[in-house]
Amino acid sequence: MPVIPADPTVVHPMPDQPRVVLLKPLVTSPLIEVGEFSYYDDPDDPTAFESRNVLYHYGPEKLIIGKFCALGEGVRFVMNGANHRMDGPSTFPFPIMGASWAEHFDLITGLPGRGDTFVGNDVWFGYRATIMPGVRIGHGAVIASGSVVVDDVPDYGIAGGNPARLIRRRYSDADIARLLAVAWWTWPTQHITEHIRTIMSGSIDDLETAAPKKQ
Image (cartoon, rainbow, N blue to C red):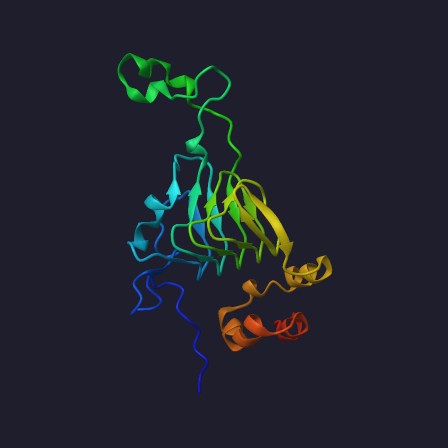
């Protein structure tokens, strides 16, 4: 019986569950990059991810999400466009109200930002997690439900709370180095398909054994 990979180009990978969408074939913004098979789950129009879940995205900073990431309902990315001035008595953005106030638009342009927001591969976001601008979340990380992530999260770290703090690492430093070296998310899709059980439930030894042989 042939081993058939899943299709990364369909928007709804589960036809009987329209609440689940693959993001790569869905997003259109040049400021958002998403790897294959990363999905978003929401019962209330998940196809509106770009407008409802990526907030204040006026550029030029990018949101970069790797492959095989799982985004629970209500996960939101706050981008640098949400910034207000904090070096004067008021943080209110007067110029956006128009009329003569608009003459002072230079006061709200060019505010310092934290750069691109980066999410590695195989990251799991719990229900209604919020990711603040410029955060880098490492491969294999887990973000607990309701967390507000304001600082970077290391590879295979578990972070939670408001503001989110590192709770623990999923593996030892040595094992994390092995996992990053094997980088199963870079394997050809056919090879991943043949080793799903090892990727989901095997040991690191098993994963290294299953890795494609270098030519």
